[in-house]
Image 1 (cartoon, rainbow, N blue to C red):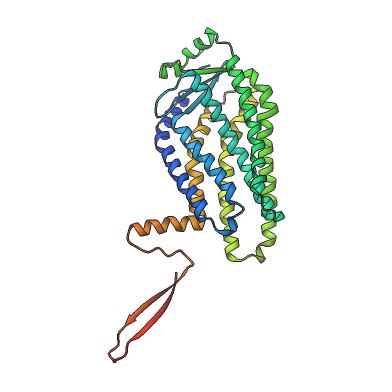
Image 2 (tube, rainbow, N blue to C red):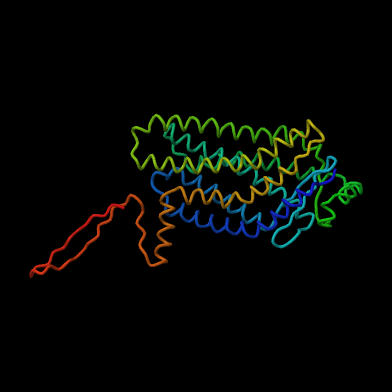
Length: 347
């Protein structure tokens, strides 16, 4: 099966984007992590730890994508994976290791979303503040399952026979003419089916089932309590909701759709899904800066801190919306006595 030229175009776009987007993602997530630790309001105290979890994951993902950019496709039942980054193509062994890390990040971003919604559900609907001791098992169990899956994938890749025909098939494609590289690893797709059915698919479906159900329960609870909340509380909940929506959307597009297409390809052997995998790969690169920006822009204390620093650098004073400041205006009248006029300015 020939590799469409569109795949080459998408891969080239990824290679151009990665050196630009990934450093931006690193910087934004470092800023975000600093603000989460130092500027999170009291209303977000219980939610602080999950923000740190997702921020650290996205930070590591941005750094990973910078050096280990993945391209994967399959020909006649064989997966081929190439890895390159700002330092160029990597060795075959490192390509295998980096791909398994890539798979871990894909599913970890997905399960982290389920953990985030679980913590929020316990806090909003049951007034349970998840302790640090209880928080680690929440995401640790998911990560353990993902690591087991990654271990099986590694074993399959190592045990796939390195037949000359496998490399001959690749040399007849547009990819080989374009890249002419031998630094790739191969894996037998037929052996993925069992592990996809018992691990990858359940993890994906259960994670999003948790997200959808808990999102509805949280919305229903907040709707009932909205009349009893202060404007500040409503604003805080609204900000968190926006952030959660963005964080849930990106993992849904990246692992869920490609996994679904791969599952269909087991049922429909000649189904070709790599073009969508490349599209999801582009989204995966954009994930760290997009999720960081969503938090920085939507959570008021973080946004105000950033604007304060920017205004101060320009020699100006930033007054957040809704804050009341007292400005003292002194005037001297023509009489011997001076008067002070105090004006309250509502911004």
